[in-house]
Image 1 (cartoon, each protein chain N blue to C red):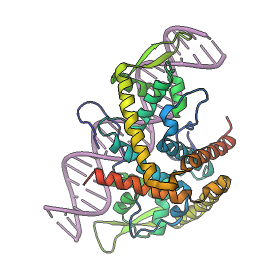
Image 2: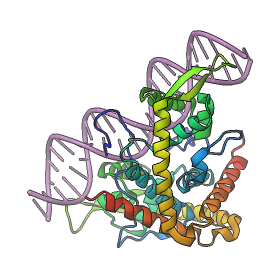
Image 3: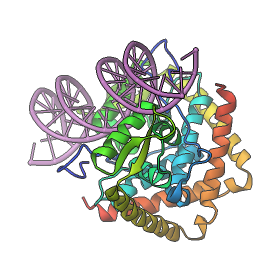
Image 4: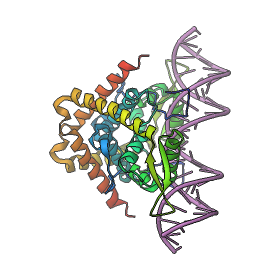
Length: 173
Length: 173
DNA sequence: TATTGTTATACTCTATAACTATA
DNA sequence: TATAGTTATAGAGTATAACAATA
């Protein structure tokens, strides 16, 4: 799925949705919260690309842009931590955003080993436009969900905390 | 994160969780259903590996095993469709399961071009053991969630349908 | 002519390890 | 000695394209 054959490598979304196939038995999968979550996430992931087709950005890159926008001078290492990435991953991500001219590395005034990440003017424009689109899209989905949407986000956050907690307990250090 | 250095390439889970970092501003991300969904999915994904540590299986491979178990004679192409994969992806997935001796390809009685996928005896044992663990784990999470868990799965399924529908509408053919 | 599975290839993402420079 | 970032490399995952066999 090449959203822009013109300019850059561009992130790829999975081609096919994870829809239930008629006539197929799913057994346990139909009972699992985790599988329902995966299906929903897959659907929203694909939908994100649809909504932001004009921008050629992945959800991850959008998140990185927002984090830099909200935290001027953000270090790469912190970006990695916030996004669950290895340092080398944050490097690539930053490189991509820098090549686009949306983010620039400046010397960190406190620690000479670090960069401070900052949005450029064009990066700021991107974030603003993207944010508007993403917000509208998210709102539309919530509205379509109706009263079910109420509390869904909170429940998901609760669920994430619970799952993370059990993971931390079982995998010390 | 090599769960088994002994036998196979084994799938890698992301190393770090997607936890909110203290002192960081997340801006829009905190308001988005999609981001909450991503965080929850990431947490459950990591948690799956924790719960099934002894088995060396990814959620995807578990799903494939279940689908073959529930639909004996399943063709590779259908497996691909059910899992949102390209045919070549289903091939690799099947190869991995076959190498493990959990799945075998038999001639399809109706269509000589196709394989029918079947579980081996050891594959069946794997699925049974895995299913028990995964079920227990899922139940524990649901219980910890409390009354919030009620309806969450249905809401997620509803959300997936909505997002898929809008994607289909906007991306014809 | 279309479809199933395969082979070969390429690209993205992420991780590891070794390196530099700063702390 | 530890940390921030970089470089180089390797692995898994998925996509494309061309091919054989069959429908």
